[in-house]
Length: 176
Image 1 (cartoon, one colour):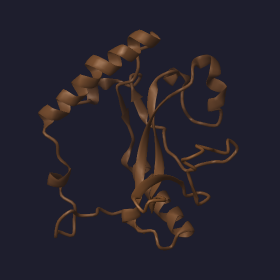
Image 2 (tube, one colour):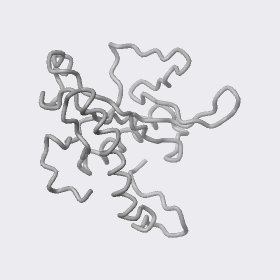
Image 3 (cartoon, one colour):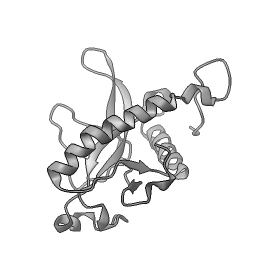
Image 4 (cartoon, one colour):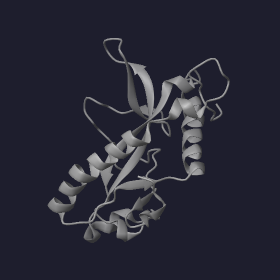
């Protein structure tokens, strides 16, 4: 598989009109978060939490390409339409627990701030025949055991989380 747009119409290329939201709505949604959830988190935890995360395009494309390639290695019948990415809301550990971040290129200034963890998904039928998007560790071909929620802590999983948080990065480049 090669990472490329999957058009929603007859055209062979994706267009910007397929991926648009009115700026006014984007601003309203961002303001809703900042005026509610962000204030609650900052007040409850006594921190200045991040309100955005940025990933560079090559990192996202490489992550998607990795999902496509690994999924094909595990299930040659998997198509692009069977694959997806789940975005988990997450938080970095406290500064005093930062040792669990050893081996990850993330600065301790991110301690306690929220982040996103991106995990591959694979569309499969459940026991009732309903198509669902299951978390999928394409590094080992395992579908998340959703009933037991079991994870082998010694095992690596294909995931992405190192985007740039704001704050601490300077928000002057952000429109919203």
